[in-house]
Image (tube, rainbow, N blue to C red; front, side, top):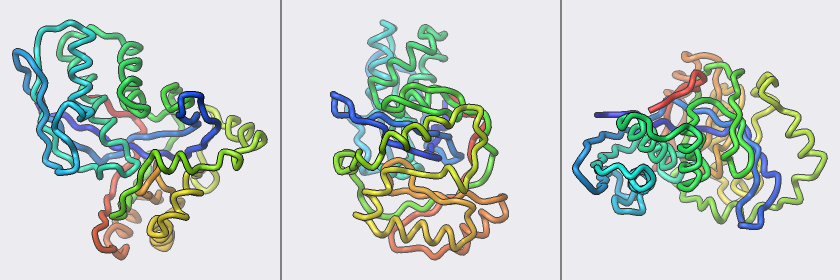
Amino acid sequence: MKVLSPAKINLFLHVTGKRADGYHDLFTLMCCIGLFDELTFELTDSGVSVRCDHSAVPSDASNLAHRAATLFFERTGIQAGVSITLVKHIPVAAGLGGGSSNAATVLVWLNNRFGRPLSMDRLLEMGALLGADVPFFIFGRPALATGIGNRLVAYPLLPSLPVVLIHPDIPVSTGDIYKSFNLTLTNNKKISTIHSFTKQTPFEFAKHLENDLETVTLERYPEIGAAKKRLVAAGARGVLMSGSGPAVFGVFKDPAAAEQAYATIPRQTGERLFCATLLTAGHTA
């Protein structure tokens, strides 16, 4: 059976603290978009295997989809296995959550296939063991996230607008970006303002699109800033880097404007462009 696994973007991302375990506390608004990997499942008698068409994605036990399936069978005690074929369309290590989405899709699909032995709360707990973004993809709808991104509240007020993404052909280390982030830039007054945004606050693209990590990433990688400028020149209502980058997106007023931008934005060597839509109604495996 073939299942779609969506990408996400962060419509804002604020770093609000650093934890004793080395992770950072965040306040972020995430939404899935209509850009998907494809996972095909085949149940087997035992064992877990993953095949992937992307050379940068491991197919061994370190793969997040593999880890998710292994964890499901361990926690449920179900005596079975699964073979997973993964076709990647979401750029790898881009700030779009592709690997986390794959893991969530595996957990949700297996849980549904075996009669839902795990509650939503258990699935979310297991997702958090695999990665900070995995619970969001299990949650399956636009959400405000706090903690390391694993405490989620549904956000129902996003309009379903089109986005154009640019993925510059540069490697960005999420760990290095967080290590270099200067937390003193997020003062108490700013934190108070940040948390005044609630699930009842209407989202304003000109006002709320903000990513604290850009203070590090744009300085190190000018290509990302240049990509943002091309989206602005193409008529985007607002532009932002997603996660720790390097992918950036522009929000457009309607599909025609997005399609025109996609067709006319100058391409740089090695980069990829995508046209997608905010999945404001949510997405589940």
